[in-house]
Amino acid sequence: MLHIGSFWAPFKGFRMPGGRERQTDEAKKKVLWSGSLGRGELYGEGVEVMEEYDAVVIGAGVGGLSAAVLLAKEGMKVLVVEKEDRVGGRALSLRGEELREKGSAWYRRLLAGQYCWLAEARPGLEEMAGSGTLDGYVLDLGYHGVSVAGEGYFAHLRDLIGGYGSRRVVIKPFLTGSWIGGEFYREPPLSRSTDVDEKIQAELDRLGKNYLDFFGKLLAYTPEELEELDRVSLHDHLVNIGFAESGVLYDYFRCIGTLITTINDPHDISIGDILRYSSQVLAPTILKGGEVYVGGFTEGGVMAWPEAVAGRLRDLGGELLLGSEVRRIEMEGNAVRGVVLGKDGEETFIRSPRVIFNPPVQELFRFVEEKVFPRDFARRVKSLYGYGSVNPYIGLSGLPVPEEHARRLIKTPCVVPRSEGFSWDVYMAWNIQSFIEPTCAPAGKHLFTAYLPLTEQESRDRELVMKVVMAVPDFLEGIYPGFRECIDWELYTVCTRLEGVAKSVTQAGSLKPDVVVPGVAGLYLAGDTARGYGVDMDCACSSGILCAQAITGRDYGLR
Image 1 (cartoon, helix red, strand yellow):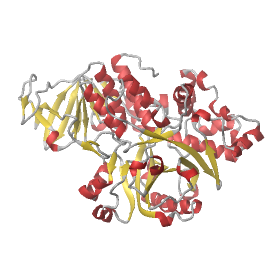
Image 2 (spheres, rainbow, N blue to C red):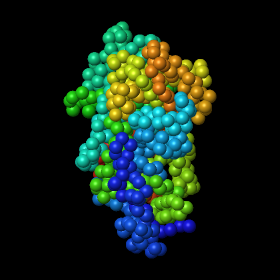
Image 3 (cartoon, rainbow, N blue to C red):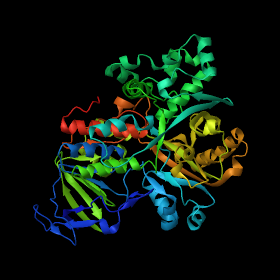
Image 4 (tube, one colour):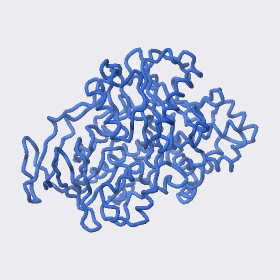
């Protein structure tokens, strides 16, 4: 049955993992409309809510929240609808206690809702849930180091919305390094990028090259030049600048490229996305002064950031509805009319002339019939592919790595060779996350986190995934003798869309679908599958800013 009405759920009075806010059933207030499109009939305790919004956002992921909070700041009436019980989308966190309280089936459902599945648990997940093995840990879904320790597009949005109010977001920076051919290569903060490892400098000197040659014109690139570079591969770029003449330099810069794009194959990595982020985010941030780092971990879990943005959204008059799913986008001809929600066996209509779609764009035709869209757009969307990953979480009884490594994100070009059936050698980036951000593990324990990129197809192939799972502890034991003895537990999750649209030479940056959907009035895109720039969550954030810019006509400083 279709009701004309609205749900309303105030974002207050509940706690999130790590001591932050999370919704409870008591906090939800349901409003059903009596049949007219005017004022609502209250159902139980509640607040009378008008049924029409200036914009409805589907999904409280990073991109959707970024767009929503900017619209609210402009005085628009905004509703964000999220199917989960928490904000963040793929940038969500959970407390280990939740596994014990809610059970293994709940955890598997949470993973499935974000394009993830559990490949392996040691001991078994049911045993972990029953014994409270994960109590005291905070796990982010997938691997979620925050680019530039939050000083990229996250900081740009923070400044646009006037901060987070009273909410505190702390991102602890980390250094980086590489492990290539059995040797460790240290890397300085970005603000001292010319202070490179002596072994890398020796290779550069041998070839008569400079480290900064990799970045080309840097601040002098025009938008048009960067759009052309979106179609150029990392491999071709390394050949063109002469770095491919050194195997060490090739692997070193391939690791940097994979870190930014989550793609293993350097022939598929877009150099344009790397150089755009370097020129538009990294270089300007460095020029502001102070130390600038490649990334960082959020205190209390990565979800602290989307929670802070959601809180700021509410400060500005926006509304957030958790635990409700959008069934479809209602159309009138080729114009958006609103959305239909499904909850508790009922359907409820929310009227709005604008809808922002935050899930992966490949899901769009589940909500609107494909025939509504121009053929070229529909064909393009169906051709887009993402990139997945295996994400190990390992609980450790001690610190089995040198502190020089523990304070860094370390990258290596090959943990599993392509000869094992993969499209390219499988890279890994890893941290002792708790050494950098101690609140993610109980006192006296450590949390190891990592990610190993796979193509979407590889990430759905259990046999290939298990090759990666089995290789990880062996690889770590080879570098750090005694690592296995420190293992308390292991979880290996797989995300089939860690990057919703891979940053490849056919679909990176400017090649992604625009935030304004063609042929449909009032429909917009936000998130890492729409036009946006940068690494992972920064990409989703920049897409949300571009989306809000398109709706409001304001200049938020992105092109």
